[in-house]
Length: 133
Image (cartoon, rainbow, N blue to C red; front, top):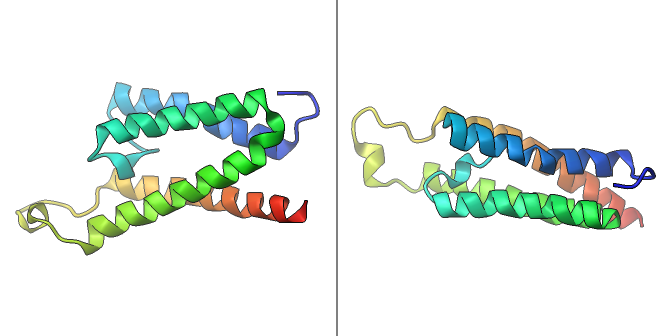
């Protein structure tokens, strides 16, 4: 990242750089906070982590692309969060009707709030920057 990088570019790069920490927490400690909406699909969860690390690589390679990358990725994350949580809550399956089964885990709620807030902030901020250009 160049010395002239803006604060938002550094913030986005830090967010994607934290993916490594989230991967360690997820697979090392078994606490899935960042990609809990993909818990039923471990292959997609690994792909999502890879995608976030690839976003970091592109941002470091081409800092000028940080805003469009962050904006598109945050929109994808918002849609995935909404669909993932909505499907779990609104479409019942056999497991919901079993005894002592929760519809949504605390990890999924934390993920929804944390990732949703960051994704909405990044999308909103990115759209303002892109429209202002």
